[in-house]
Structure formats: C-alpha cells, structure tokens
Image 1 (cartoon, rainbow, N blue to C red):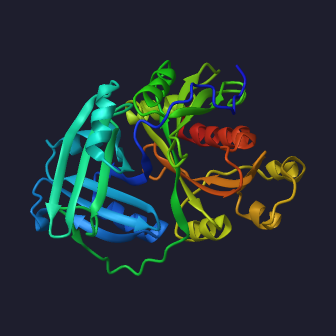
Image 2 (cartoon, helix red, strand yellow):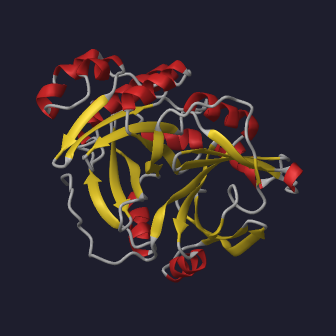
Image 3 (cartoon, helix red, strand yellow):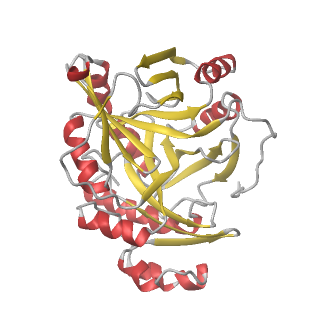
Length: 374
C-alpha cells in the first residue's frame, strides 16, 4: 500500500455542516491547577467558569481561550463521579471534541440514523444571554463528539457558566485555531473508525499512510486522515503496525488504557515566536539532532523564514505541491506519556509533514527509551 493523497472514497455531501471546532474538553485531576498551567505556559485567557459558585455541585470547569481555540478543563468533586473514574483510568485526557454546527439536534438525529451511539440526547440550555443546544455521540475509546449550536447565544460560554477573569497577566503566544486532532486506536480498529467518520458523519478520506511511510528501524504505525467537506475538521486516526519493539501507539494505549486523543495540532502564523515563548515558559519539545538540517534546504527548497532560527528552535520543515509547513511537537503535557501538542505553521501546504515522519518518530523513540518502554 502506498501513500494516497487523493480522495479515494465516493463523493458524498456533508451529513451536516460543521463550522469548526467549538471546544476541546479535558477531564483533569485538578482543573484549577491545569488552568493556571495553560494560562502561564500556553497563553490562554480564562474566560468562563462553572462550579459550586454557579450552582453546579458535582464538578468545576474552567474555560480558556486564545483566538479561535477554546479549552474546557473539568474536574469532579467526588471520587465516585464518572469524571474521576475517567481520570483514574486515563489520567488527564480529552473527553470531548466539540463541533460547532448550525443545528445540533439535526446533526445528532442524522448521526443516529447513520449508526452513531448516543452519549447525550439533545438538550437546550437557557439563561439571560440566550440559549445553546448540545447533543453528544460516542467515538473511539471513551471520547465524545458534542454538537454545539450557539447561534442564539451571546454569553461567555454557555448557560451554567459565568464570565471569569484570572488575576494572572496572561500574554497570548500567537496560537490561532485547531488544525487537526489525532486519535490513537487499537490494532485493527483504524478502518472501523475511518468507516464511522465516512458513513456516520459524511467525512472523506484524505490521505493514507502505511508502515512504509511511518516507520523506523524499531517501530511502525499506520494512519488515515479523514476530513469534513470544508476541511475545517481533520482527524488522523493511527493504529500500531508490526515492528521490532513497542511503538508509540502501543505505549500510548498502554498508559491511556485504551483508545483516545493522542495530540492536538494548533496553528500559528509565526512559529518562531510561538515556540520561543513556549520554551521560555517551560514547555518541553521533542528533540531532533542537528544532522536533520543537513538535507532540509535540498529537500524543501527556499522558505521565507531564517533557516538558522529554524535550526536553533529545532523546528521541522516539509513541503508538498501546495507549499511548505513548519512544525514541532511538545513532550507529553502530563506525567503519563499520552497527550501532547503540535505547533504548526502552514505556508500553503495542506499535508501533514510526511518528510518529517522518520525524524519525528526517532525523536519519540528516544523518549520511549528513556522511559524504558521501547
């Protein structure tokens, strides 16, 4: 099987329009402390809160925002709560990939008719700022997709939340929007979930990578990328492939205790500034050796950024027929080696950095070796 970059599925219209990522919700062991981390390290501003002070007795949620990226960090008030059980099993991790739609109830009903499993039936929440309709379905692992229609709402987030600002002097670092979210699934499940996105949600298959594309001497994986019609939502789905040693996907599934969101790619218009700020604020990145840069200019050609700065910041570069991209990957942002972030700047390129796969996976393997799991 070779890398496929063309649409290789029948052309079908979107099951329902998706306008973009509405929010990403993490279930956390301590949402308050996590919120401080994302404000100080990633430059997100605290914009809303719900908890006992707002009449919500069983949990607390902090809503953070930077440009079009919205994170919701949630913790439970008791160990018996399903949120606590999620954290016990998975550690801090993504529970909800919420999708902004024009009609949440219609999106839910259409998905259900096409074979989705319900997680939360449609509900309209109201307060003095208007109303928000939400509904949820299951996807891989314990992850949900929540459909959100906020066309009749002008409050800070949604009913049940109050506006809240932090005393921290938050300085944004140039993060713009969610570029894509990557899911890791068990061996043999990738095609099942690709089929789910195609048949239930009307997504199309963009690219297929096999173990010849994504492999090193020791490990390999396979990946397929699905996208909605307008391209605002892109979900690469990974599964392990046979290798000499334990792959990063197998390590993730072992520590996360099942399938889940592996990483979130967030876009910036100035990756040199963004990464410099993240490093100064304590965020750690995977390292690629200097030998990587010996062939970059020959492989990628001319780019407008200063190659010396690219090298100093240890940023990866790749090119496709539409342009080039710059990308870098953080180390996991919690103690379990599970969720991490990709910082990406696109200069026309629509691909995912295939030319960097080997360097990236060797960098991950170095971290696995240090952890004793390779």
